[in-house]
Length: 101
Image 1 (cartoon, rainbow, N blue to C red):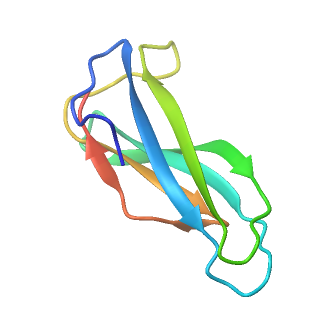
Image 2 (tube, rainbow, N blue to C red; image 1 turned 90 degrees about the horizontal axis):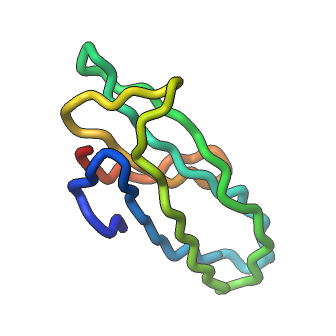
């Protein structure tokens, strides 16, 4: 879940998620997040950022959150239009949530 869908350049977007182990045994998920940046031609390119790796017992839930900065860098430009964010757990992407800078 995002804290906002309109993010000013120089600001940031905060996301939170609950992750639950529904299995009968302990699991050790590698949790990342992927930001799909809009390119000048209208397509999107994905960039993966590491969050955490935790051990979850059976039926255990953890909360993860992060602030992602939307600021101009020499290696990144922001183009108008929708960008997206998704969680990735053990290489499997969740549904994207869109935002606009």
